Image 1 (spheres, helix red, strand yellow):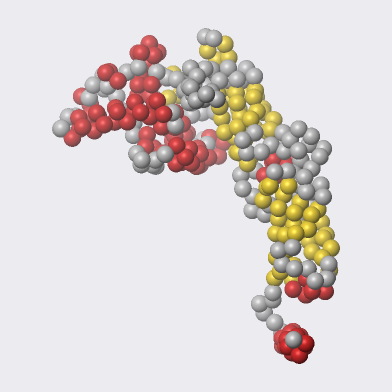
Image 2: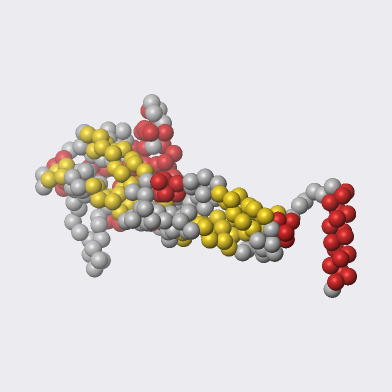
Length: 313
């Protein structure tokens, strides 16, 4: 039987020595770039998105990847010996499930009909099962189920306020709520929102990944931020403006404040996941800034300060 050989490594833009971390990183980057929500009406992006998901179903699963690598070695040896791609016998690599299901299947996974139907190459070789298996605590692999596991990326601000994501599954659309205070690694289980099968409908497991923020750093339920304070304010005292997710606040700067000094703003941090009415703190670390351009009068005053300091020493 003639089929088109799929180069999954090339589709994800990685080499054959890539480890699991490299594969996940490449998949997430490309999936964000070609996601149908960002490319509405773009047929080429939709086809690219389908190919990316198919490639990850193979390379992101150790069993599928091992089989695919063996097939690839056989296919490339055949070509090196002068064989024509159209004459290669793929049937010896067919899975039993793939023979039973034929050559087309529509998974109807998290992205609905946009990007979910896999190629005849995949369904024939791997049986049409999107099967990144769950691992038990004892390290053994569970049999493939109708459960689906999906990473959901949210911003730090969405983690602060809560967020929602809309999915399509089994012909219907639904909204998943991500609670305020969610952390990277937080799991959300949606019963009955997995894949439909003969043994019933599975569950959807969302694993949260909170993206880095340009201003704030998260430390548990606390937030950390750097606040610029000019040298005059640090010496004489005054005020500085501190950003928070609820708007800027004024911070009193005592006279003689040192660089890297940390001020704690109680209750301005992240909400607790299970008690969202409680918040962590905001830790504002001072960074003293010095002027880079001085007027003649300012330079004269700084010179006087230098002379006074030298005389005192």
